[in-house]
Length: 351
Image (cartoon, rainbow, N blue to C red; front, top):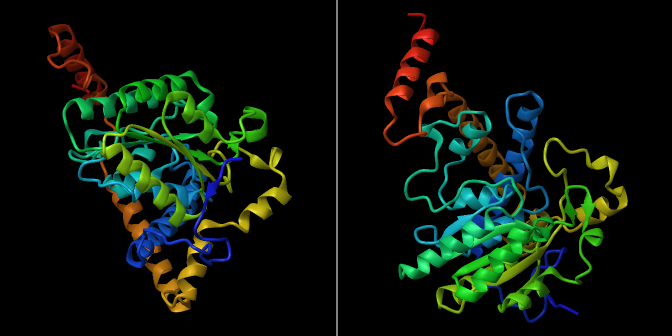
């Protein structure tokens, strides 16, 4: 039996004998990001239904896993390699939310690219395809003598891909400074976890690659942070990779093309709501006198204002222009391409 690490119970009380690393100020910041994540999900899903936003994968129910893991990193030196559900991890790393929002609105221009100095790789939709690159990045940082760690995200569904095995195997051999952070939300789109793998805990797979694996309550932001910090410190000390399995639950659809009512058991969903990661933190902070109705109201207003600012800024970004078809293809475009571009612009501009 694998021990699942936990600190904060669903009722907001601390597991006896536990001493979390995350202080109260840091926890308040984590809660802000978790609340921003959920409110942003709600806002942009509405925009998507109006045809004003692209296909989107919300983090509903997984906020503690996403935020708790990201807060273990130093954005000035460490890297994040996301899958597609780690929005607030990327934002915490320094990628402005308004630029991310603009790309979802189809404004994939040089203005919305990942800014210089933000240590984030692009979102990856193809399952596990980012993991070999993440291992290569970590190995490269090690070869350069950089004091940096890579955190690579993956869902439990992606662990069935060959890229998962290849990336973890190479990372183990090279003792690369990387943390593989798996969000086990119980669903690989519509395939339940029990139908995907017979292994009792995905964290056990780490042993096959020669490094530690740990299972943590993914709805407990304090425990996620503790486990992630330990893995990051281990990587930074030159001790190699770790695999963290955050056991959580996807309390919504896979993405905005999905209809979970066709396969989700309503009773299971209701039971999962009792483990809501945001309410867990609020109960704890209320019990220690750092949260009340007035603070909740203020936080809700601040989050709503931030989201409106972000959406307005994204809408103000320049859109894609036809002549961008020729951009970023060649470092020095050959004469025939320059000629084609001139002819294209002439036809578009009408002269």
